[in-house]
Image 1: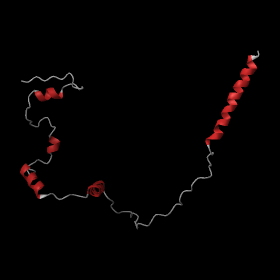
Image 2: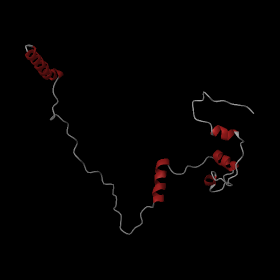
Image 3: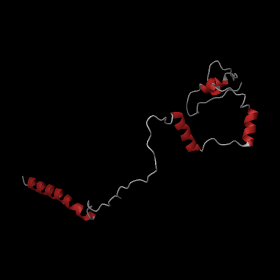
Image 4: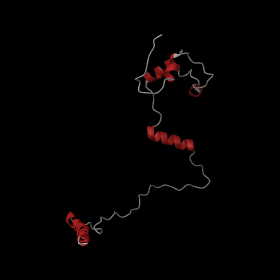
Length: 135
């Protein structure tokens, strides 16, 4: 029974000693020493007129073309070298929907043999088990 009061006294001393640890850490924060924000100001007048009822606004395509012009500076002129290269490549002979018909199953393509499908069907991996057999 003599040990119980000593243990209680020791536990109380340890618990109360933790309260004194916070005093040596420096000044406490002052919640009233906060910098004030700048006051709100009225923005400058950009002389914008409100829309008038019954008038036609911008369509989605007009807004999109204006956004592209703002981002990329509008259509750029082509140099004479680029123009001659495009002409020799046949840009005037390309069908309008060439990109749409490129993946069409009815589109004629050059047969690359069995090598291309074999390469495309190869399992993904780090390549340690890869093998090549020449034909």
